[in-house]
Image 1: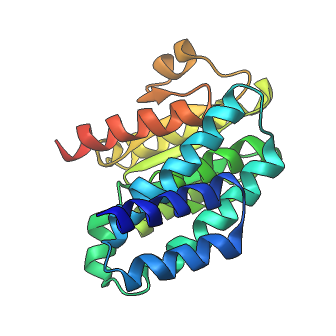
Image 2: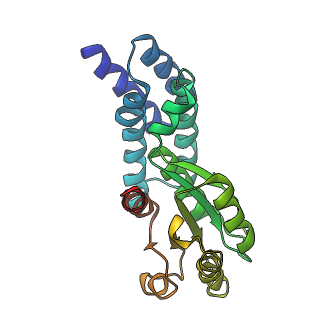
Length: 220
């Protein structure tokens, strides 16, 4: 019991200290000790990412640090999940999210933070990148059978692309298969409600919380 707590603590600290090698060593230790990989991810690594997320929200940590912490997180996750079957991996996923910056928009720092936080919270994230055409978003959502379509608009001129995604899903008669979550500096909860989206998130940590609720509603 004590050894398990010690290893979980190491995993958490490795992420907090952004130490990839330490994270990998702790992940191997966890497997050798027979700790459940999902538990090691949730109670060790994800706990460390939560610390980083809180620090980021408080302005105590910055994007480069989040990115390095996420690298440590992902390196350890790769080791921990290497022994799991595809079926177990799918079971452990909190949901599948299609993430992108909308058509005409080339900003991606905010999106990358959301990706980091979502992955660290157990979501499977498919990142389409920036300036993604509306048609491609819908095509990929169908191809990957995602739960959530998440799109960021960082300029008022690109916000209509969020509305167009919802419209295209309706046109194709598949709107109810996906939850649509939108965000970005000029975007508001009022706008998302007006275009028929399912959720608005202001920050990366809020995006994670909202995504959990949306998946629950979808799987109801």
